[in-house]
Amino acid sequence: MSDQNIKNLVILGGGTAGWMTASLMVKVLGKSLNITLVESDKIGTVGVGEATIPPIINFNQALGINERDFLKATRGTIKLGIQFENWLRQGDSYMHAFGSIGKNFPFCDFHHFWRRSRASGDESSLWDYSLNYQAAIHNKFAHLAQIKGTNLPGISYAYHFDAGLYAQYLRNYSESKGVGRIEGTVKSVQVRPQDGFVESLLLEDGQSVSGDLFVDCTGLAALLIEKTLGVGFEGWSQWLPCDRAMAVPSAGSKPIVPYTRSIAHAAGWQWRIPLQHRTGNGIVYSSRHWSDDEAREVLMKNLDGEALAEPRVIPFRTGRREKQWDRNVVSIGLSSGFLEPLESTSIHLIQSAATRLIKSFPHQGIKPEEVSEFNRQSQVEIERIRDFIILHYKLNERRDSEFWRECESMSIPQTLEHKIELFRRTGKVFRDYDDLFTEVAWQQVMIGQGIFPQDHHTIADNLSEEQLRDLMGSLRTLIDGTVKSLPDHEKFLASLN
Ligand code: FAD
Image (cartoon, rainbow, N blue to C red; front, side, top):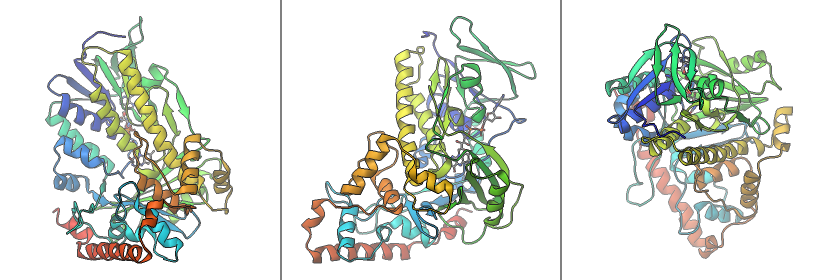
């Protein structure tokens, strides 16, 4: 494809994708690469994307970021899971809590024991055995690697943060390590006539920025991968009906809860992301079922405190870029595709794409095998996440609006159909090698969305009735006691200062 050594990396775009990519690249490959980032103050960033999932901790560790500095600078809070309200039925709620549930036995997940216990009259909920859930609803948090005196895992967490402050934080980090920043708007892109490789970016002020490899982080504009190279987009609106969002910050309220809320409405759902200084609110909806005015009315009626700005409409397409890497352009962030923010996966996909690019970095020239492997892995990853998100819509029991009735009756990808039916019949769920979400995540959403499996694993029958009662009782006592001993989430936040 090209044997030209890669020495000059140009990242176009300075949103979350641009600065996350720049910071990881400079940290890991800064000695062998010149990195330049171009961003336009005139265009600005999408300005949303404030909830994350636990692998972000690894990202920060890879950069060597101090958590206290990070949370102070981004006005961040702790996230222990996502609470889904009104998703199964109106008035119903459950949480996708991070971390594990109960205690796993070799070859058999805990929920099989819970199912057996329930089938014989126990009324406890699966989430009574989730340390993360119990800590979340009691507004507690501390760093806890293990439950004291046991080998059971402790708390698993992620962050909420202010998107603008996050980009600024990573910008400071990247610039201090040698990333060059150019402020300007790209007017045109020069491509090599013989093979269509991008050669340089021409800015409105007349500057020209050339490079060997370009990372397209231009967000929904997809300036290089789509507008320049013409790489197509595979849309998934047949499964994910929402195509617009409206975002607005509000003053927030106390207590500052350590979880994201996702509240379903008649034609979409609303998020609430609690930060130290405000709450991020927004609504994601289907334009076939709701006008902007209808969405705005529902959003503004359900804010967490007084609105701090006018709501902003963000149209989007769900789907994936057909090739995330084409010629000498790699797209990362919204330019590479988008899954609505229901499970806070976009920032993770940035982290994972930047990591993948480092692992396959083409120092000695771009080889087609490397490009196709990168694209294959990216495709599998986003398709698994897609299935997990469709699951929430498909398994609803709401019959109060056309939107939810359509979601319930839609046909779904075969991969997902198989997973749901296997779980429904046997209680078993398996994590594919490339699946971001663990078995415990799938179990929670399937059970939360109304599946009580028809059977459990026979290993759960190895315990006598009494042993089973003891197991369930002792786990609850252990979890309740641990939660009681934890400090308040707000106390943890106050301790940052
Ligand atoms: P942007 O932030 O749009 O940045 C694009 C950059 O490109 C900007 O710097 C812009 O100036 C620059 N640019 C564009 N054109 C040009 C040009 N011609 N010349 C120069 N520069 C240019 N993800 C999560 O993980 N969690 C969430 O909770 C979450 N919530 C979301 C809610 C909504 C409604 C949406 C739409 C997305 C959400 N996301 C979430 C996704 C997340 O916001 C994005 O993945 C993340 O912000 C990355 O965006 P980006 O950097 O790709 O694009």
